[in-house]
Length: 126
Image (cartoon, rainbow, N blue to C red; front, side, top):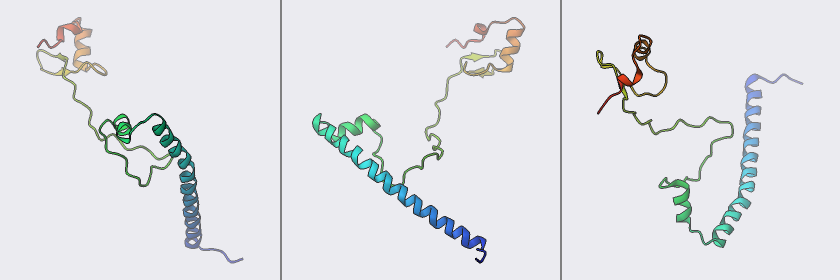
């Protein structure tokens, strides 16, 4: 038997991977059909409209387009919405440095507390 080259072996493996991926997609489609049928039957039984499902599921989110799905085990995408900024709760009177009160206390506050000041004395009074 002749030795296969690396490229030929790689092509063979990729062909097998594609074949298995197609089998997995067919299997997934077969598994989804009874679930969809069950959902449709339940919607008819309880007189639920697709609009009610959209409102309950997404609360205004656009419907998911039928396309390639994320593969099992693939990392989820990072949230696109940015975190909301938190208003500062504490302020150093001399430097003006602030802290929201969340997470680990900043060094300036820890140093002031170590010297005897109370955290409440740095509260921002608006």
